[in-house]
Image 1 (cartoon, one colour):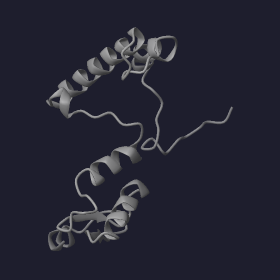
Image 2 (tube, rainbow, N blue to C red):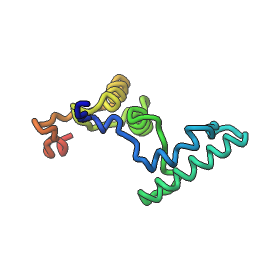
Image 3 (cartoon, rainbow, N blue to C red):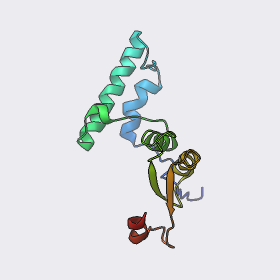
Length: 136
């Protein structure tokens, strides 16, 4: 078998074996909807809230500050569209010109409603010039 080298760990990555062990009960039998009121739903909600508290502790945050999303694109959309709305004419977003589509598309969407967006160029190493950032 040829050696496999995977270069896109930003998009997806193998699960840590400890995560597999922790998730196994919820992937293989106990899979209630955490928004449901029945027993399986309550068990799932308890597990989600425990995980939320654990993640919050890692970051020194309150559990209420932790939001789980299904993907990076969903998280990008939530962060951008949850901060600047189409009706917010005073909004101003500064981003790089090489961001992922999950960042660029909500920026373009907001531009259509009048939000100012600055797309900063990057150098050959993908770095933004601090002066262009200051100017934006």
